[in-house]
Length: 294
Image (cartoon, rainbow, N blue to C red; front, side):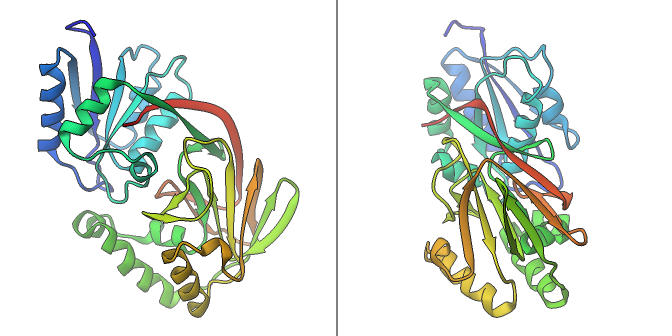
């Protein structure tokens, strides 16, 4: 790579919903790249949505676009790349709260390994789906977990990370009343209290809910028939044991297109961020973005 060619542009998004920002790691990665003759530019974003604005700019011309952030930041980059005529390879420095995509791709977390990954430029095709026109690389869900995502206080999330979701889940679970969902998968109709359309193997961290993965084509839908406290405890235990797909009252099925509807609005979330409510139209797409992998 000739000296002076822009290899990487690093964006670190310190918005109110993202945690785990580490300026030292970011600076260390930059220094290691520049010592190898690679020009870098670091931008600290100033408002939500800025990553998407940069990624959709047709004048964006970089060898590699690096996002230092969580799953929501990656979602913004994908949203922007949808309208970019020739998106550059994407690299991820895992910051943020959950970093499920980092688990999917087995991404390194120390500066030396991250810099090596960027320099080696080994890529894989990152698949994604669309929900009401919005891309998702991990999941779309509707039901209890989305209600928690909508309800978690931003200051609590920044201070406590994953624990903020646990606290909010307990508070939400005490007073909530669930609503039936109607899930239609390629014409077949199911009913349940909770539904997750997944493009990834993992959900909520290291927990595996379906086959495939973000670098494999295809979507899966997980539907839970019940969400009462006893059933939820059983589902949670099955999830911890890696047996959620075998639990009673659970359906996991591949699909190409789906809808999730309800008699009243039910909260939805995409890649860990709040996303309105039902109805949802979800479909597989054949588009991919190149992502750097170890």
